Image 1 (cartoon, rainbow, N blue to C red):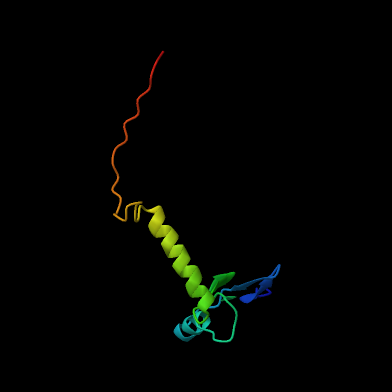
Image 2: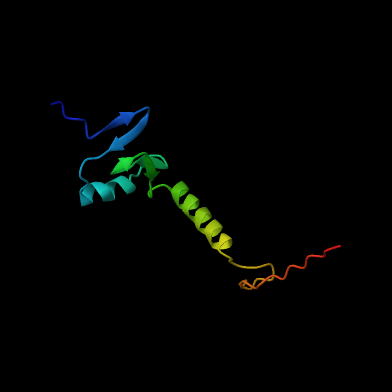
Length: 92
């Protein structure tokens, strides 16, 4: 029986299903000299290279968007609290 490859590329997208080691996990997320995206240490696709300043900008923007979406700072600078809204329907 032919054994399937544990790593490679499929339609230009990398995959790697080899058992990850701690060294490989750490070195895959910190690759100075590489671009913003690097191959994932386990699984399919790409991940952020934390040695690139662009990755930190992406993380900061995503964190700020998540903070604001969950009800962060309001218009007056105070933290908004959820208040019930009264809806009045006028039946003519």
